[in-house]
Image (cartoon, rainbow, N blue to C red; front, side, top):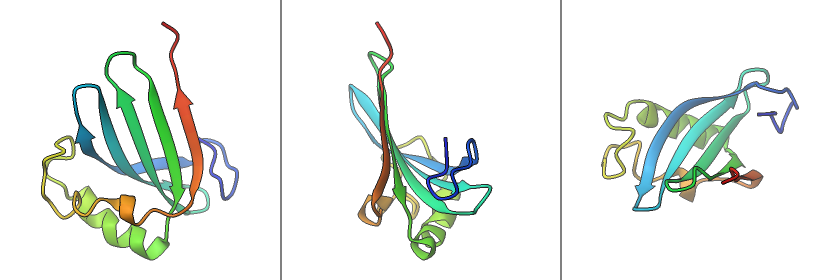
Length: 111
């Protein structure tokens, strides 16, 4: 992924990723990401579909202070792949604190 801030390719890495919703057709994850080059923090959301391997990824600008505050609890989550987890990292979800959407990438695999 190219960092929207510094335009460095491959520099954005995921530090924490939590499953926040899952049903019979898809799973939705929220993630905390940071550029290794310029240290800009981002939030990400990925919705993965079970039956066709399609997914939608969205990247959001993050308020650095809010991002730092929520990253610690997310990294300490005892069950990151459990959307029923009630740890501090899972609630409230970061979706209430996300900033402006920077990237929205639907990915569809040929059948």
